[in-house]
Image (cartoon, rainbow, N blue to C red; front, side):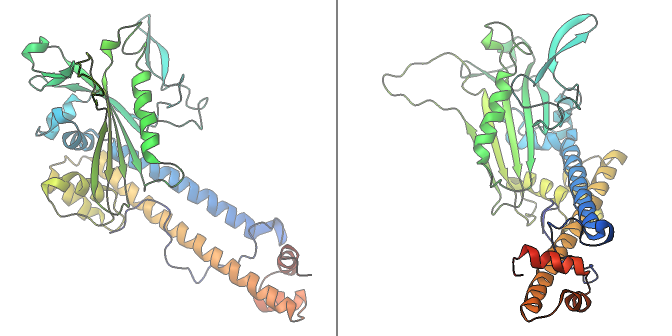
Length: 371
């Protein structure tokens, strides 16, 4: 099973027209080859952007988020997914809230009152900024325990007070190579805490800080894994019980392989996400797994999102195959042109044999500095 994230090339397209050089600007009339390559690159980037957005929309469905919460947050373990979904407040923010300090919050005018909330305005002004994939508030239901001063309290002990937590979910096509994912997740979870000032607590009311979870889903991993990273206390001298909530910060790292695991309780979440984002599973099989194994209500919006994502995945794979073919053809053409030039063929002769323009041949010869 392969996971339908972009970046993997398919089989070569034998009908692809030869391309000689990536850097050449006007090597035939109107630069048509370059224009085609540029257009393909733009289309591929657009497909990837659309695909990434659709993945976030799918994962951002409340019933999918409920399954994630049940497997990662103690207070929701064992609960009915529908009941958990009902605890998610409002509509989750998807690629709407900036991560950058100073931009996560914004002053909002609500019924004549100025309040601080998540900054979801001015998308164009803040274009290019890193944003949380998905972020939302969840109510901890009555009867479930929560934590205060490192002690789990029951409903009666909290005087029926509803408690919220803040959850961020990030979807990654694999474990990033450009940076350590744990470092990034620590930054994100720290922002979820620090951005609460003036939004969830004011002045020095630090006891009002809400517990936060940053949950990272990494596809195409070597093994199915799940890690909970959180604060702990090591006594260096005589023990002392410091007051406060040591469980405020929580990072969950979930690794999911290409191969769909069997329907086992330990891997229920991995199987669901794996099926949801797989490129090798047909649409009908995806929907059957979600409906029969996870009792997900497959409304028209959800079905459309799954269908569109699969179509976008096919398009991305086709573009990846075209790109691989173009690269291979370019390399072959350049090698043939250089060898023929070294053996005394003229640019016109090379162009006729390789079936490219003379200007293309001359550009390759010039770039390779073999004149």
